[in-house]
Image (cartoon, rainbow, N blue to C red):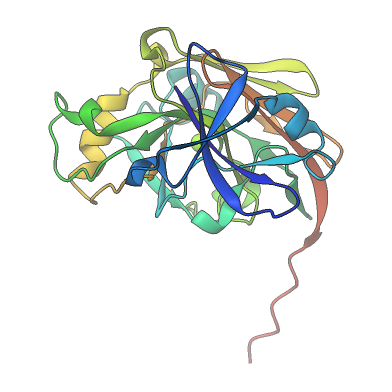
Amino acid sequence: MLLLRLLQKPDRAPRFGRVLDDEPEVVELLDGDPLLGGRPTGERLAYTPQQWQEDPDGSEVELLVPVVPQKIIGVGSNYRNHAREMGKPIPAEPLLFLKPPSALLSPGRAIVRPAGFERCDYEGELAVVIGRRCHRQSVSSALNYVLGYTLCNDVTVRDLQKKDGQFTRAKGFDSFCPLGPVVSTDFDLAKAAVQSRLNGKLVQDGRSDELIFSIEELVSFISQVMTLEPGDVISTGTPAGVGNLQPGDVIELSADGIGSLFNPVVAGSALPPLPPRS
Ligand code: MG
């Protein structure tokens, strides 16, 4: 099953929906959040995620981020080939950081690239969505707390990541967390591959079996520190092939069983200088 959120015109009220495996071209609308027991209302519409993302203002339906997380946990250097390309050692334990929910960006909407930086990189990642409260769980039970999987673009100003020595500013700009287009609840993790295409050209191709720390290890590890709540997102790290986004680009992440997440890139303003310190 695929779970999603959308806005239907003209009323534009956010709605939850689901796409069942035996009817992959139809969205059934729900009367509420499926994490809180939302049930089908009987309303149905055609599932055309590509069309909706290509023209979110012009289409009858706009896709929204498929869940509303309290927190988005990122994992640094979780693919050997990406650690190598960044000149970083293979980590002995997961390196965690947080992206603010204010950075979330709906499918089809534009990443705003702040001006004045050399590198504003895409990072295509498989993301885990938590289905029920998860506190201090073992590796062997961790997957019982997972609702499903989606795609996350962990957009990063590389200059600021290096300059600041931590990730809050570099990964925290508004629009730096495209997420979606759907949550797949029966995603085949064993064969999962996440691909990124920049203006149609394949630039990243990562398989989940190349993760240094597995999904269940990450969920368990994080849950020892912070309680994971339904809807929380863990973005599991990016494979090799990260690269710079420029205004006018389109970045697309895709995975079999989830679909494609498209986002154009537009130019933002530069950060204003700080006033001089006296
Ligand atoms: Mg990342």
